[in-house]
Image: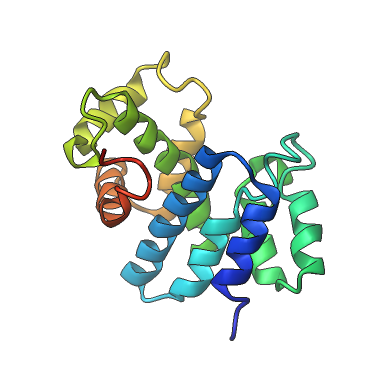
Length: 188
């Protein structure tokens, strides 16, 4: 199937998102989602679009019950197919959308953990992704005072649903982000 173009998705993301950190988060999750698709032999463009757009409406509609719901209406009006909209909406637990396919499981597993790995990178003195290890991320996950906004249970549930080992998946995400480290501000 021919999906909407990345250029169209990029334009929508930038139309609804002004915060540079949210833009970088979208780019990071896009990179991870593309890597997951490549690993499993799935559609990299589809996975990338879901990663890029998963939080595009968050700045305007952050409330539970609005985030991804309002965005879904916007994407539908822009001609995006239900496959992409449903996957995006599934990453918000409160939407109660089953995560049955790899696409839905991947976005749920990748979103919080990718953001967490970026946070771990940014608190390190050198602020370089190349200096972050799965072990250092695991240690920070246990520290409840670090990145309190990250729902640890969703991290564990996401990795479990994806059927992967947490430490291995952390390493996978780090490797997926390394080629993009400079543009994400993770290699000053």
